[in-house]
Length: 65
Image (cartoon, rainbow, N blue to C red):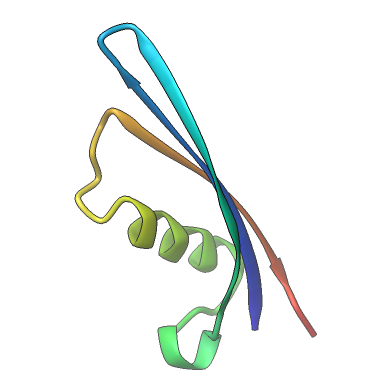
């Protein structure tokens, strides 16, 4: 199990907006996660599935024992 939290930053037309995403959990068995890097990738794909170039997802992910 991984615990994840993220900040989403969007820059458009000279303006910057930021949103803090509440903490959520990722189940490595259901999502095929093998390490923290995989979990960070899953967080990025959940929060920016179309990979909008104006959006930056900054995840913080930790393995929960």
